[in-house]
Image (cartoon, rainbow, N blue to C red; front, side, top):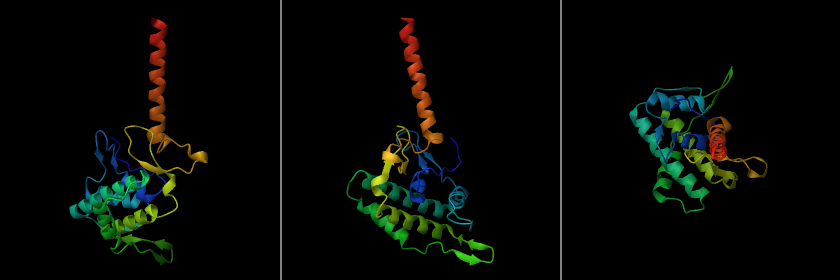
Length: 187
């Protein structure tokens, strides 16, 4: 599986929750090392520089990510929030967040992994209590569990991203139709 971090969900909290891929089938963990976790924080644009992390930072991030995913799913399905997941997210959101600094070159954000995680937790709180909640949808690819914000006209978007899921799913459906058509003419 591709180890590149993907940002297609329309919100950092959703992209963070999507770092455990294919939850219903062969689960694929993106945060396998502290370096991979820090790479996500950097690639997401959350921070410009980050201090080295450790395994405790990875465990904390995975715990918050799983709580976030549970809460996102609860809200998307119109269910009550899971109390344990709520406690995990709120505890993380209370920690010291990333603080941007103004420098002669412009804005610069240096942080620790704990500060970056607190910031993602706060972004999740904002998402789950904000106006974009009715726009949340799960990807139409049965193997994908990414949740994204659908801002398309008429909310007709089906995939988290065309490159990541849409093209693959459409190509597979086309091959299946061609195979069926070929089998039908051969009889």
